[in-house]
Image (cartoon, rainbow, N blue to C red):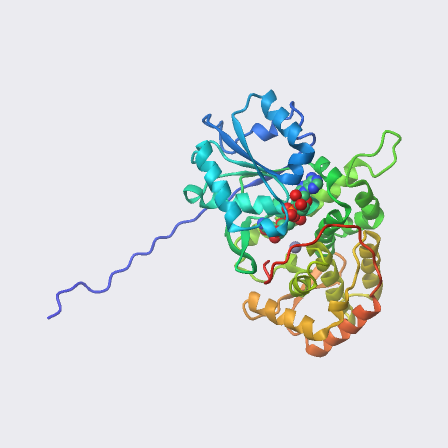
Length: 406
Ligand SMILES: NC(=O)c1ccc[n+]([C@@H]2O[C@H](COP(=O)([O-])OP(=O)(O)OC[C@H]3O[C@@H](n4cnc5c(N)ncnc54)[C@H](O)[C@@H]3O)[C@@H](O)[C@H]2O)c1
Ligand SMILES: [Zn+2]
């Protein structure tokens, strides 16, 4: 007779509420702005806070950052980390962890602060999510891409083993602070890359945002989203706020019901279906946002050929891309073999389905799962016609990291 107990099992079920805020503010570094001192979830228990600063930001704004905390006699210590994709490594994460140990970071009351582009934000985010199994942190994005895209994201990550974002976590910071005055110093090409994500957001859900880009996009790039000169020249500050605000709001609205990406049919993946492989093959030539804009055009061509999108809308979006300095095409997008390979990789990423967001109008999407090889071939031919010679100002060499990480 078998006296051992029959199989027993226990199911533990719990739910994790998630809430994090993105705050747009002006004059973040001016001493009378309290935002940087606010500790999410409470007063803070005293103790030292680590302030991680992007190296480029440190050169340009380091003095003002230090003056701000000196003025408030805040107990902080600094760590300067380099931006750039090549620095999105696990070694940098461990450097942050060592510094958190050194300053004596506690579980809740001394959340580290990160001021910089998407790379340092992702590095510090991953470090915070691992430290003591997860501590809060505060994010201050300083590039356009990080202000409109990373700012809303719940994800952190670093590149590993030749793949982008291979190690990472879902752990949003409770607070993200946005101040567009940081954009004054962002190199023009980087800024246009950030415009690629705003362009995408306008196309999938925000016709008003598209019209703003149509009217003011080129000038916003030119003035780097800064307030007009005293003589009134430039784009009104309210327009710059509205463009950034609408991009953030649109992203937040799309992510909120699907934060953990359980639903792989995501309209925010527009522009990210064919571009990951093209971007990787083109390195160091193309920036992420540039490849995204080309993918937006490529997908719109498929939609137009199917009769989903009227030709006038296709022409209009190509012209807006050009106007904001985003080339609509690239030779790699004329290579049907490569684009089909990109699609195959995306289908794997979307768990076996194409789930291709497609425009039915500017500001509206549907999803397709039956885009065929001949359609891709025809779209590639059309991309050939859109090729142009474009000159770009120096943005420095882009990093060489293989793999498609999204
Ligand atoms: N977590 C997410 O869900 C998410 C979403 C989108 C993108 N990302 C990540 O963001 C990264 C790209 O971010 P990025 O474009 O900000 O790159 P980045 O952080 O490398 O910044 C670009 C360059 O600008 C410099 N810089 C930063 N702020 C500046 C300023 N105000 N003035 C002058 N120079 C400044 C940086 O030092 C760097 O050299 C990628 O690694 C991408 O994977 C993450
Ligand atoms: Zn993107």
